[in-house]
Image (cartoon, rainbow, N blue to C red):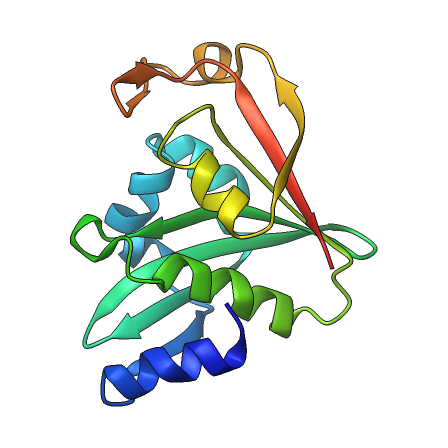
Length: 162
C-alpha cells in the first residue's frame, strides 16, 4: 500500500485515519497487543525497547511494535488489528507507514506462527519466508496457542527488503 492508497482510505473515511506513536503507558493497549502475542511476559520482552504505533479511525483499530535490530534492520514484534476491523487495509497501512518512517530500513523482518491467517497476509505485503525456529511456541509459551484451528509450533520468520 502506498501513500496514495493510504490517502484513499482517509478519503473514504472522512479523513479520520491517523497513525501516532505511543511513548508512554503502552500497556493501555494490552488487549490489542495480546491479539498478536498471547502471553504478557513475552510482550514485556520487547515492549519497552520497541517503538509503538496505533492506527486510529474513529477509535483505535490497529497497533504495531517495532524494534531496531541492527544497521538498516528492523523487526515487527507485534502487529494486531481489532478482529471486527480486519481485512480493511489497516495492517497493510501500518506496514507501509513503517517503511516510510524508517528511511534507513533496508530489511524489515517479522516472526509469526505458521498460520494460514498470518503468513498469507505478510506475503501479500511483500514479505518472504527466510527461516524457521523449530518448537518456538511449545518451548517458550506456557500454554498451547491455536490459530486458524491449528496449534502453533514453529516460529516462521519473513523478511521484506526495500
